[in-house]
Length: 131
Length: 149
Image: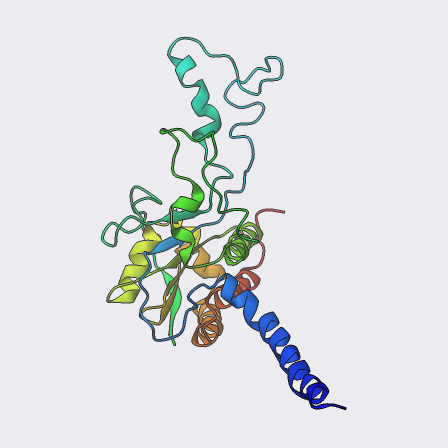
């Protein structure tokens, strides 16, 4: 075994193996790096409010509501006069199936985008925890 | 994985269209996969229990409890049946607020247990996992509504 062969087997091959393993472990983390939360670090993101999807998804009204008479394949009735302008608003009237995420505009007006007026819910319960 | 979603705006967008979902900047906290897990957990626990679970992640100010209760009053829908999970990672505080009807099915002790498991996960840096585990505990405790079958 020559000196070159010795170096190849005992230095280059282990180095190559180590490099491959390092790429496989560090590679995915470097691709989509997102600042991970660590306890104690400041939180500089805007407040955000997640809410569940509404129970009814898909069509806003559906059959049988709003005096809907089936006109051909249309779910919604034909409208006349002023109502004709509002026809396109029917499907967008209930935001069923829209995004379940809502950002909150400001700290003092918190929740203003979720509901216009507050509704007190009687005696509140719950719990509090710190970490 | 996420690269397919973060594409440029399509031709269907006009100047009257709202900003695209990817332009809102709300996805900087959690990845799409984490958002999908949160979405599913919130939706399924709300549907199974009939309560309305909402999740607030952000600063709660001082005192945190009154701010969380104020947020609960704004949570929309029937607030008596609403459950707000408020997490303030900057202050290291988690609050669970239940409405009067929800409090009958979710006693404070059950909420405290869920908050304890959440804060344990938060202390390890796992925000999404803690929230989802807490939601699951709360939903399991609340059970199914008695009026519906």
